[in-house]
Length: 147
Image 1 (cartoon, one colour):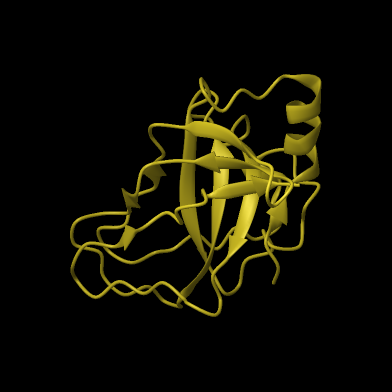
Image 2: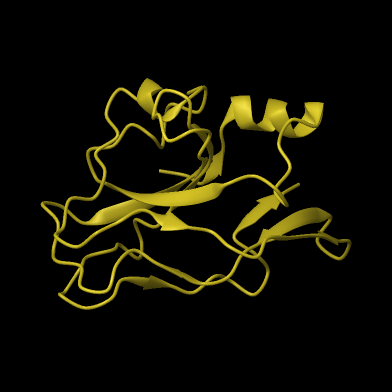
């Protein structure tokens, strides 16, 4: 698995059709059977052969809030930052560990229209609910980087 941006989302960025300041950006956890880490040409969430979304009790997809887009000239990239987020207050163990995050734009609540932006590989630090909150602390340099 490797982190990366989905090609249709990159196209939207370059055409000016994706504005992180106004888009309804959200995130979901995928487990180890996912194909979301290899299908980088997926145009929408429904296009993944196997999403394998996290299935622990109490899990919910997270909203990303307070976007901030900034240039990082030291590292020659753009950073997209959001507030820390949570997937639920009492999240139970899933059938498998969560191995990645899919950042996506919610268009109208229909999975066929919601489109993936980026995959963040977390296999080296997998997610697993333990009955408490499942919180994510966003890196000080942002959640997404474009270089």
